[in-house]
Length: 77
Image (cartoon, rainbow, N blue to C red; front, side, top):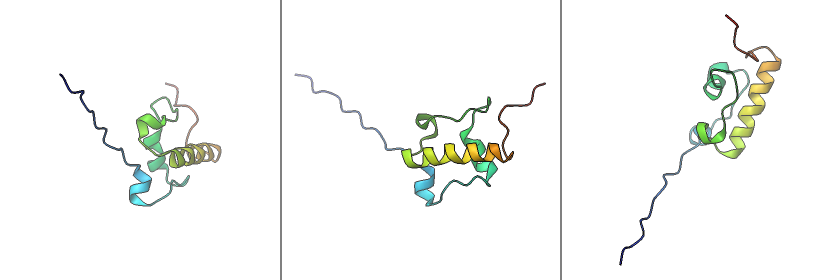
């Protein structure tokens, strides 16, 4: 009889939970990590953030866009 394989998933740690920090709209370089090349907010499965921090990152990115710290769209060439 063949025993079923057990696939162990390694728990991806949230970047903010590990460093015990919070995302901030003033830290633009940190927020750019969570934006695609088309300036869309990356989903949680790609960013590997927990639900709490993913919502907070999205909120901070939107706030930074309103304050013109981040662009809404890429520059047209």
